[in-house]
Structures are given as C-alpha cells and as structure tokens.
Image (cartoon, rainbow, N blue to C red):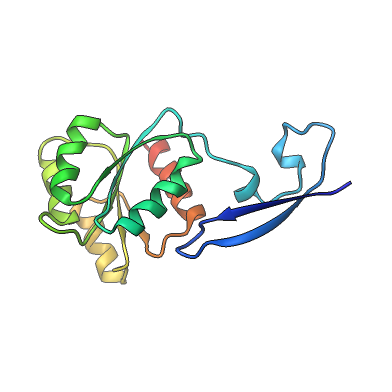
Length: 167
C-alpha cells in the first residue's frame, strides 16, 4: 500500500510542489526505514537553540524563517546590522545568520562589533557575493561559514548543524 503526500518545499527561492511516496513499514517511527529522502523524512531538531536572522530584504527574511520553522528553533529577526548587534545581546542566540549587504550597518561591520564586544556564537554570512576571494575575506573577517543566495534549505540546515556541533 502506497500513500502519496503532497507538500511544499523551499529548497531555494522557488516554491515547488513535490509529491513523495511513503511506504508504510512495521516501525513507522524509524524514518530511515520509510524509503524517503533524508531531507524530507528527517527534520533536524533545533528546539534547544536560538537563531538570529539578520536580513534587510523582507522576502529573503520570510524565506529563511520559513525554512527554519520546522526545526523548532526560536527565531529572532533583525532588519539591519545595527539591530543585529542589539538583538545579539538581548536575544543571546546560539547562532547568527547575517546578510552582508544591509543598510545602516552592513554584515561585516555588525560581525566586527559583535566580536569586539566578546560575542562568540557562530555567525554565518548569507550572501549572493560568493566568489572565492569574497568567501576568503568573510572567513578572514571572522565569519564561521558562508551560505550562498539563493538559499538551499538542505545546505542551510547542514551548515547550521555543523556550526552548532563545532562549539
């Protein structure tokens, strides 16, 4: 007996309808036996963590927040680097997703301000500017990692998980 589940995913900026066939098994709780791709079946549980999303573009912010909601994490958003600095100390996130190009205070300046004030949580740059030289510069500035836009949900979750376990 096959069951078809219709769902929406946000693996990038495009929303696509995907049909997934799930084969019922003896132990339905064991997701690895369901025969579904890991990214559909396995949801990372980040319910113990707080994530700060610093993104000035409201559409990008909504996409990132929607990608993260299924993980159960607490999410706080900042619309520019200045807000990100303030929210970093008020919210005390376990990890920060920081856009590079933001008004008022950009992501690089916000990163430096947070690090100069003793902030140690992983900060991942989220940007469309991902040439080899730019990625090297982000790393040299103190970012823990870089996620390219448009954002791939599977890669986003993987990099967050890696950064959190590296602490």
